[in-house]
Image (cartoon, rainbow, N blue to C red; front, side, top):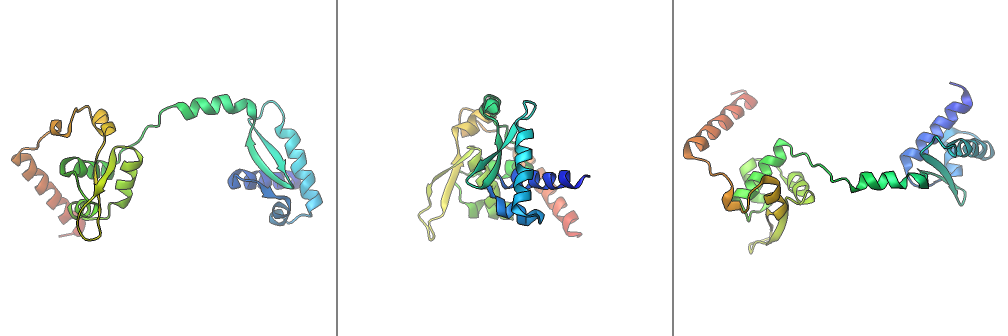
Length: 190
């Protein structure tokens, strides 16, 4: 790669990765070139980015440079932003959600006792997805938060209330218990 193009590639990577504006002297120090030469490189890049076949541009802000989207592209960004986000529920999230749904109101400590592992991340993700919400605090030492399901949970799983959730028979419960014990034996090498 030609030396000038290599410097431009580095500048492009810096501006793209940093997101915010980056001072000229910091860019120059990173590519180990004088400020004047660095400024010439950036200004050349700015001119090329202004071509109509580009969706981004480089702007100057008081001696700093930033890569940003061209104004005429905002319409398309808004279309993407308006599309509903699809949340993927992993096995861990589904397991945690089912515990909350069947045991609500429930604390993180109770969830962790059932799962046997920390559930902070899973509970936080479920709150972020609006499938679970904080219901208040338990009147106990430390006043732990209580969690329960939301209307979005009911809508997502096609039930009118938590009473409509399927009930497991004692036979199914015993099968699940045996599967879990067998899985633990395999993991522990017993």
